[in-house]
Length: 344
Image (tube, rainbow, N blue to C red; front, top):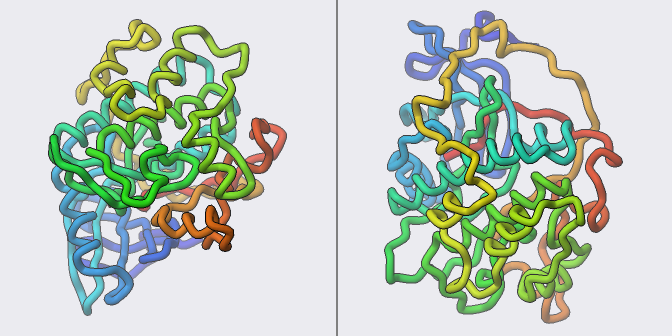
């Protein structure tokens, strides 16, 4: 494994290290600030890989934000046509945390969920909607605090105006996104996705889970799911209010924070979330190899409509929890752990 101190590849004041992950538009690499020694992640987007307006939207939206539970963009550099987005480094994904632990206890679920809601509420207060909330886009720092990442499908929203883009990851998408000519303000689709994530926290499976896109979309549009008997009454009520099909009747983020299920959870504030700079020797470690699971894929949901008309969809609806309806992650081994953000 490559060590940063052995690398002579630099960009600006950063020495690049090993690759953390690869995506459709670029690569994320570990990096170290040459003077301070701070460990960061650098997203490298080669020229022509991403439309300039999409790149500007992603970076611009995330730069509006300043919250301890959101991955920060530190600076943006350009060289030879490529764009280098320097970001706060996170140790791992929430996805891996869930896979390794199975169902979360209510105390841990409340802690992480309140951090998620605080991060999303901050986004909305800065007029940004994420539109692709899922465990793969939620990272963890070395203190197991949640960090919201990947703003590639985000958009600016405005009260009283409507967005019409149908995008996201099918299993986490709100029903209003699944129709041609969809119209939505923005925050309500993030609330729905948070409801799916909370269900996954407590049940270790997804509320809406079918092999095919048409069957999956029908379940989502009906709001048809079951709640295991071990889920407490307050938790089930909150999930139901978040997974309300009628977007006008769906609970709002401020109402979520006032819900009885979170009554004994202190609000997450910046001073309460430790920011720890991990020393280099703690970052460059060999993680144990574990078996990979399929992951949720972000996509324009319009590309899935064809399948509801008898044509083939461009992708499967499968997500990390979709190998079998209501199947437990513990019975499906664990995922290969991957550190580092693919964030905005």
